[in-house]
Each structure stands twice: as C-alpha cells, then as structure tokens.
Length: 472
Ligand SMILES: *Cc1c(COP(=O)(O)O)cnc(C)c1O
Image: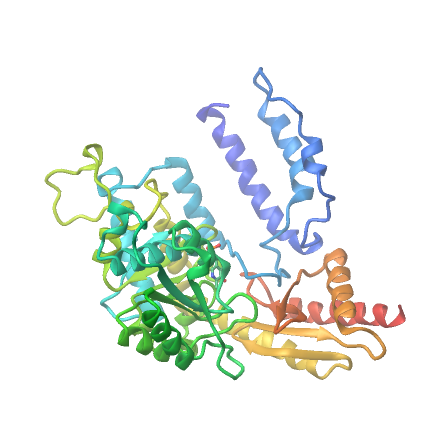
C-alpha cells in the first residue's frame, strides 16, 4: 500500500467508523470469545510476501472484531469510561498522518505551544488556580510515578538520582486503602519498596477518605522511628466506589510536616468542569500536583492524562536529562515537555483536546457529565426501591455499588451469579469490586453517547436477570 491508495481506504475507514458507531447498540458490549481464539486464528509465522490490503481488512473483520470489547458502546457501565468523541478521533487521525515526535519544542513547536495553551484551558475549566502549570502524560500511572519520583528527590535533597537509595533512610509515602494500585507500582519503580507505602486507615463516613489524624500520627511515628517521610497521595474518586479524601485536611497535615502532596483524580477530575462538584476536592489548590484523565470521561480517547504541577522546577529537576543531542541552543524561554515526563518521545496529544473543547464547548461537556450523574442517581433510587436489591454505597458522581440479596440465597453467590449472567447477556457491561470485604457490583454511567433510554435498558436487564436467578 502506498499513499496513492490512501484516499480509497481513508474513505472506507470513514464509512466503517460511522457504521460501527451506528450499529454499536446491536453488539454485545463485552467480547464473548473464549481465551485463545484470536491467537489460534492468527498464522504461526509472518508472511514473506506482500498481501493485498483487502485481505488484511477482511481478516480484521473476521479475526479481530469478535474479540473487541466495545468501550464506545453507549451501555458500557463497567470500570470507568474511556470515551472517544468523534471530534477528538478526527484530530488524532490528523496527528497519526503527520506522526510528529514532539519531545522538544523544536521537534514541533505547534505541539508544544498547543499543549501549553490547552493545559491552561483545562486548568481554568476545572477551577485550579493560575499557579498550576500543566503537562500531558500518557496515563495517570505515569503522572503518579513522576510525582513519586519528585517526592523522593525532594526528600533526599535531590541526591537519589545521583547516588541511588543505598545508605539512605527508608523513604515513606502515605495514601489510603482506597487509593489506586498505580501508586503501588510507582513505589516499586521508584525503589522505595512496598513496605514503605503506608496505608492510612479510613475516617468514618460515606466518603471513605483517609483519617487526617491517623495520617499525622503515622508521620510522627515514622519520624520517631528514623524513617524519611516524603509525600502523601490523596484521591478524589477512587476506582472501587469513588472514595474521596478530605484534600484540605490531608494537605494541611502534609504541609505541617513539609511533605509533597499529589492528588489522584484520574476519573473524577473531569467532573470538576462543573463547579457544583468541586466540593469533592475542596482544598485541591493546596496540593503540589494533581492528575486527571480526560481520556476517561471527557472524550479525548486514550491516551491523554492531564498532570498539573504547582512547581514544575521540582519535576524537571527530577526528570530532565540533557545529552548534547537534545540541547536546543539559543532557544531560551521555550518548554521541552520531555523534561516533564519519564518517556522521552511524545505524541501530539493536545490537538484532540483542542478539537474536543471547541467542538462541544465546555457547556456541552458539562451537560454530558451532569446527565450521567443525574441518570446514575435515578437508577440507584430505582434499584433501592426494587425488592432484593441493596445499595451498598450511594452515588459519588455517577458511580454507586449494589448487591443482590434474594431471600434464602447467599448474597455473594447471588451477586456473582448476577454479574456473570449480565455480562454473558451482553446488552450491558458491569464490573465488580469489594467494599469492606463485601462483594458488590459497580455501576457507573459515563459513555459519551449514553442516553436516558440506555439507563432504562440497564434497569430492565438487571431486573430480568434477577427474576431468572430467583427462579434458580
Ligand atoms: C483509572 C485510574 C488510574 C489509572 O489510570 P491510567 O491512566 O490507566 O494509568 C489511576 N487512579 C485512578 C483513581 C483511576 O481511576
């Protein structure tokens, strides 16, 4: 295939995309294939001779499509959304065609300057003060790793990168039991060690945030015992049931001990474009860094993670590396965003944010999020009023958890049975978690094209399957 063939296949792709989206409601949300089926359909060895692109496309339909779980299905209620809005998809296709590698300002000035402007638009949109600077990371995991490395270097007076951790006091990082596993991995990769990630007990109450007094006590005990406390990772909208730490209280304790604070709002951060939800992260302006994923709820498809930092100097002092071939002589005052992240190479991600915000406007995006929250809360109330359903955690934004408790049956078995049957049915897709050991089904509404009818379908599917289980 050559570029001369591209118009033909580009048109084919545009039609395919439109038809795919128009037909999504007729497909099962979760792939229904058995393990190994895609692998078995692919030849053992690569071809030596060129094959017509027609054949490749035919095999794509036959082999790949059955094994796709449709994250853009309007009835995707599992995990968190991973929204691809058509405007952002269009932008990404432009980027893919040019395929610039945007590690330095000079390797595509427009990409760098677009990123600076878009991150500032996003900062204003979520109500962070003007002293936060933003950078786009590939994922929240990467942003959190960058934050943990910054905590480490700051606590070691910038000597960790140079001398390693041998001979240093053990560093300590604090978070709640609800915080995401990306923090555990960041701790491993940073050489701090799982044993030095201190899980702070939760305060009583529905938000399941860490107890600030327990945080203070843990830091004091660690100082006493000769550890080196380095930072705290707080969460707004944790993955299980949406737990939110009291950011103001956590930051206050952290700052009293001179510790760096990072806020993981990977999912919930998108909702902060609506001022009425900002109470959930009250005090966020006190944090040193914040991450959220526009690639989850907003509609700039994977990957695009927004990382805001109050003092980028601490981050670049931790991560910047300047071999001779990366120096950009004579170009003062420019930003090289590769100095703000662990990977050197970077895609031009800001373009899809520009297309998204212009094509829908902040008002359009706010309306989408408000709808999801309202619909999810309405479904929660319907289920609460339905016999044999128990709401385990009330909605935090658009996420709640429930279980099925038919009389005379073990609730865990009945709930497990319910989610298995729901996902085999395919009309909706849900996932599970545990809350204080109780096995629950999570429901979150968040897909870009979801409508109130899709939520009604969710209710119908859930209650139909409940009837089936009652019948045994
Ligand atoms: C999804 C999620 C993450 C991980 O996000 P990636 O971008 O996939 O790394 C981290 N924290 C929370 C709270 C999340 O919901």
